[in-house]
Structure formats: structure tokens, C-alpha cells
Image (tube, rainbow, N blue to C red; front, side, top):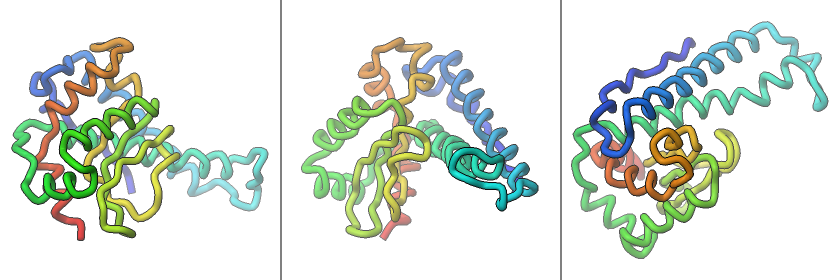
Length: 195
């Protein structure tokens, strides 16, 4: 399967607090992950698994980085999707779940922002299929930190590439802009698919 980058140009001029320069730089990085994912999958077709070992081997290195490129591609797609215009409002059902699992909407947002301050990577709001609750998880890299059995409802990119052109080292200002721009229609749809 050849992976294709989705065109998110609709975000340009539509996300309050993220400039065209910031978004275009981010889109370029996302395209790079898509390209690397395709390259890794192509090379894995011919790499010899019999030559793998912990120290070094072509197959070993490709397998070690496969999840990085995969999640780098698809976490970015989730992130850009949950910033698209036509944002709507949080559904009563999802808000009720957030209040039940985090105490209040304000406590949930504080939790997410606190998690964002704890990682240079990603913060994800998930539906945990084991306990049926909503959780926030941090990921230090694209492939490190997400427990099994999760449905991702909201993806927050906390890498500096997501905000540094516009905010420099002022991550809290970026987070404020992010939460003003959440596309609740998309997040509501993702949540409605969970059981």
C-alpha cells in the first residue's frame, strides 16, 4: 500500500493563532513522514530478516523505525483533522464523559495542558477499551508511550515544529490557541464510534 499525504490547505487562514508559515512548515514535516513510511515499507520487502540482530542490521533498523514513520504520518493526520474548520461544539455526550472521567471540562483541559508540559511529543485523548474511560496519554516519540487498546479521539502535537515559528518557546500560548480551534465535530464523531 502506498501512503498518501492528505491535503490540509483548508487550515491556512482558518486556524486562529497558527500562521500560514507555521502550517506550511508543519505540512512539509508531515509529508516527510509519509515519504519515509513508504520508503521503509518498500525496503522491508527486500531486506533479509535472517540478518537481523540487536546491534545492527538493515531489517532490524527498518523495523525499529517503522512505527515512528507510521505514527508520524497518522498522528499528524489526526491532529490536522481535529483542527479543520467547521468546528461545531462539543457534544453533550462527550462533555458528560469528560466530566465523569476528569471531574469537569476545566479539569480535563488542565490535565491535557499539564500533559503537554510534560512531553516534547504528543498528548492524546483516548477512549480506553479496557476500562471504557477517557484518558490522556503522553508520547515522547511517535512510537513511545501509547498503551494498547486505545481509540484516539483528540491528537495534540506538542513538538516544537508545531508552534515554534509562531510562538517560539511560549508553548502555553500555543496550547491556548489549540484549544480555541478544536474541531469538535471531528472529535464527537470519533467518540461516537467508541463503545
